[in-house]
Length: 210
Image 1: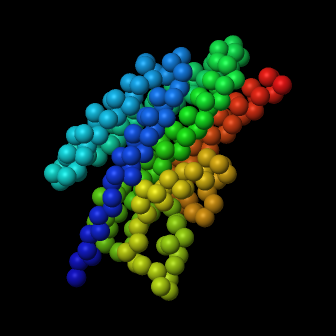
Image 2 (image 1 turned 30 degrees about the vertical axis):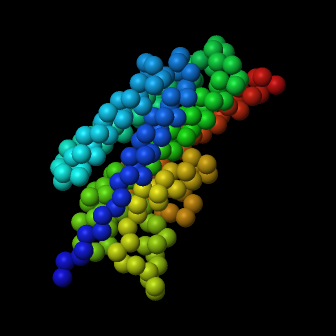
């Protein structure tokens, strides 16, 4: 008997894309790529055909559009972080503006990597839905270790990856989830490095102010 397909809700990931681009709007104009509102508009326009193609069953188009949106948000975050690092020695931003910028980039970092983990792990949401038996995840979530009373059909959803990304940016390491594959380890190292860089920049600026 074939395993029933349990659809994972996509709306949390779509909301995260809008949230990431919305937080990016909080950046001062000198730190953003183009007008700070531009990324939000582009992501919103991309999400329209993404939602339509998903509901029509054109998952190949949905996958391409989702990767495009994630890539744009990631690129914008990296470029803005570069602008922030470049502007610190020259004191381009006021302490208040820098704190706001660093917080915005830190939150964006969490959302961006949560989206990548969600999209890449075990073939993405579509691959996890059609997996026959246990999914081949790059992350060992605690629910996968539960034997008695556990649900063998359990698979991670976006909120699980968001929790993982949040822990990585705050503790600079996974907490309750083991990382198994090399690509996931590289991704988590990059996320922790970006988060550590933002925190170090804030500390260095605070010391300089004091």
